[in-house]
Image (cartoon, rainbow, N blue to C red):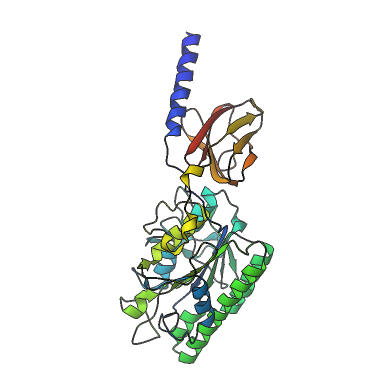
Length: 410
């Protein structure tokens, strides 16, 4: 009876391993870009921004667009108000907005997105810490990312709130770049929209000039920093424009409110491209995911790959087949080391399952060619120690999958 039970158990393990092989391939990371910086300039009307053929108030951004790409017809295709458009940029979709008692803001009510954000996708799928994903903004109780059951607060960005002006935000951003070097960074500039609502035309224009100079300065700092130079893509956009007939307001479907800007510059971006492909706010998050190698599965937008050079596409004849997989020590009373040999550098995903097919943990890494080691400390995705037993290891590099088994004895 015991022998037949063991045979049945082995058959179930083999069946489960076979099922694990058939799965969705990992997103391929074939770009030079290793870091993305997104700048949102709130409320800049296109006619005073890059839509002005003389670039009177935005000479620095115009120069960057010439170095990279500009989407001629970039649009807010939803609600032309900040409280809806900013979350749509984050989520890659027009998400519902919920409220919650925010412990980071003294328990006061705050907005949170229904759908997961680009920050959460990035941190969870690539197993990145909070200080590798930073949001800089004025000193206020910032709206928060989602409480999605698959993502949520464990994967929110690190919020850096500073000062009361765009210049204050820039100074904080510059400090963040120098001391933390996050791979995903969002800088939010709010003064243009504020000046517009106040109704002071001259102050509105001055705020645009300031934002333009800060974007230019940002690119200079990135190119002077070895952590960013030559491997960073900068995206600059708006959440909405302003009424055609009245710069003090926005919120309807007029062309001034809908037509906004998107410029991109970086190592994988076509030089001097003016794209005539119509794009919208939800396309930003998937584009970031495309560059950094993660998916935005609940987004409705699509990656703006027409902005990228042709050389970024993977030659499938050079797919990173796993040459060797070794697990040691095995059995183990704590954790284990997975040794993997790859012919070329590639994005890998390591997943550990229990024998009931439940996912225990996921580890994502970008590994170089040759022999690599990944450590797993015997904990689940929430950092909790798991019990003794047999666990199955699934390692994927591009479309190639290798399987193993580890026995934990505690």
